[in-house]
Length: 500
Image (cartoon, rainbow, N blue to C red; front, side, top):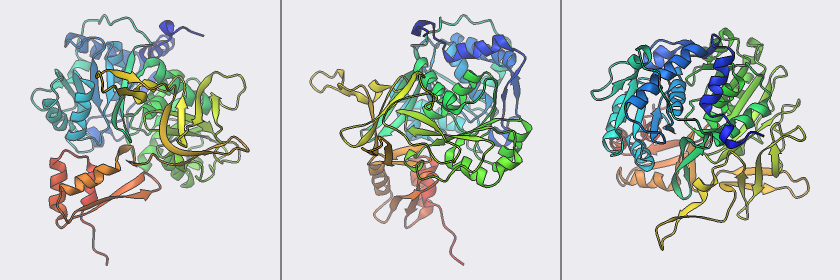
């Protein structure tokens, strides 16, 4: 086994493919990128991508961002995201992943919590001026020294990065790579509140390997990712699996089914990576009959308690791999058998692929004394979840645990050893990929007056959906926007059409 000091970083994996086939196609933008960011789509070879990564790396170093500092990124699922992450790592920076739904309140909290020195965004994403949102949040984060943006019509004070990619640069002298160094920070909500979760390159690659090996996707795969990679699970399942495969990564900014199908067929994609309920819906709608080149579908469950009761996978041509996501704590994958039903999850260590004997341990599942699911293994950032402040001296001390309690309710079948995930963490709500404390709903509603109500209703596709009621819905939307809350909260108070 390779020692940590010689293990590759994400940039090291990219350079490996660059050396093998520099002129091979590497990255493909969404076909409707003009709609998403008002900029034309691109197609880059490994050599062309490397040149642009070098240009960004040189720029970050020239701007005085020292190795180990945090650069926050809020970008859509386009080539610019991939280039920015790899350039930041090449410059020795740590990438903080900011979800696109986040507005000023969440952005400011994350920037201040991580002490971010820089932030990069896009001028517009789906018609929303993220450049303005980021500038407002950066003004409240005292650590920010640099703000960059892709696209046109950037506000004053934001450095335009499209010119950096296209312009001349001096070959950078980046720091020596170290797979044990910090690579990303993602953000989670647990019953104890907001957490910034840091992972090394080794942690991140371990998560990607668990998905890559379990799914059985080939080297040199042509992949289509319909994920916005703003969490550990999404990044590991898309960007990292692409780097491990060394093939083509085509990107789709969620979700337009007609555009996605055209992209899959035009790109001759043999791997699709998407949220599991969405992927199952596509299959039920006949996508696989119209896209016979698809051989592997990887479905991510942001509500993993729903996976066991999901419908059988209908296709025989393409395998389906369930990827169970537990917030930012960790993940595991389980490919379905020929009957199309979800694989039984057993308690204890599991390899990748889990059905093969003698494989390296990818992780371990266990039932905690609280009757919840625990995770441990090389991808799991135990300290981020078990560290606590010692009130007597203000220092950070660690609980004597070697696993993370995900908070997901679970039960163990004593006869078979099967582990069943039964419910999400108590007190934590999830709408799509956005997690928040249930207590916050009441607090936000209180700011809107005595007659306002905000509640979360169960939803099969996204976990929960929000519904609100106020004496003046328009004023409620304005108030929540002024608080810097995200559109999920604001649109809970949308005006509903009267029944006919």
